[in-house]
Length: 139
Ligand SMILES: [Zn+2]
Image (tube, rainbow, N blue to C red; front, side, top):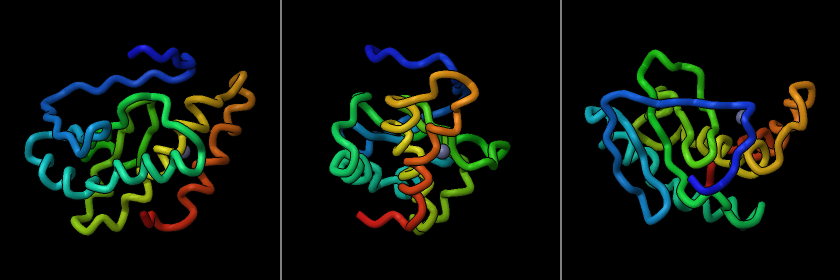
């Protein structure tokens, strides 16, 4: 990627994963057996990015994808520039739990563009996403 990122967080994803685009700048990675369900669940992620841009300004990371982790990752999500790691427990079949993605997406502004100066201020990256996920996602 062309954008520099702070080095306080590094994540690697590897495994038997496939990719399917949602639109021109969003998509989902998942194990092949989960890909159809994940693609359905996250079909509105592109609208989330557009809505967030209306609130916070241009999305500066190019693409925004979601990686659905295996069942051994039950802990919600983890934002990374360009790629959110997400628990498979939010794939409910009715898009009712995708507000987690809105939360992680908000870290593309607060947390990835504006981040902590030191470990002692790391809580400052959480304020915006907290308010972004306080309600349900509604496009
Ligand atoms: Zn968060």
